[in-house]
Amino acid sequence: MNTRPRMLELKSVYKNFGGLQAVHDVSFGVAPGSIKAVIGPNGAGKTTLFNLISGNLNVSSGSILFQGREIQGLKPHAIAALGMARTFQNINLFHGMTALESVMVGRHVRSRAGFLAGMLRTPATWKEEREIREKSMQLLRLLEIEEFADVEATSLAFGQQRAVEMARALATEPKLLLLDEPAAGLNIYETAEVGRLITRIRDMGITVLLVEHDMSLVMDISDEIVVLSFGCKIAEDVPTAIQQNPEVIKIYLGEDEEAVV
Image (cartoon, rainbow, N blue to C red; front, side):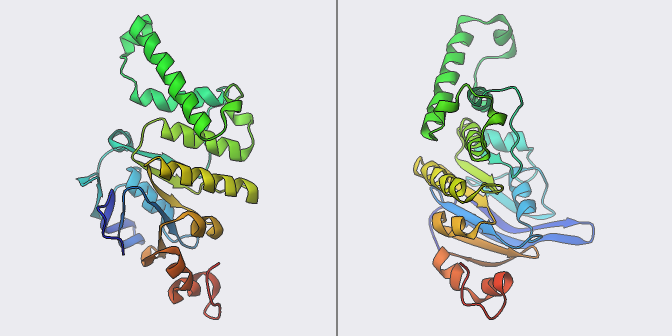
């Protein structure tokens, strides 16, 4: 396995809900500048794991380190401030906002002007607002959706809304981007485009960790894959090895199949 330094590291993570053990002794790391996927059948614990990493849930035991710092117990906004951004399976864009305005909301997290300066509309505030708009437009351009800058975001096609959501997350200047089911609800062409966008984000130097059901997308863009089943990690390897792993094949296709495709 990869021995490079790890941007994110999970060590013997457990999560219990009463008598149910949703995550059981899961350990893995994510190397800087990589795309890593977490896959598994429904109920495998993937979303719970994402909620633990992003601070939406607290671990029952174990530790989660981001850039060498323990983040277990921190609130989501504190984890985000350290350089972690997340998208969700259900797109959550604001009605009445254009695509550009939606991205600017994410950018405002990094703004320096205080509340009073914002109310008084000082020259410094105007200058920063222009910078936020310009950088937000750059992100729309990067993801090739700048033509929709002035269109209400919720009126866009589903794939375009995904791109707006990614741009909004990128506006926070993350070092690590968590993508929760980025291809959910997309057709084959939109899924291919999302895969291209994720690869482009990685090429910007941003590390990506995603949960995804679409195996074609996962196998195409991932550097490494973690496989969960009933809350346990059963495999972690490069895509070609995961495709031939007997335990993975058994979980997804049954014992008589030859490979995960």
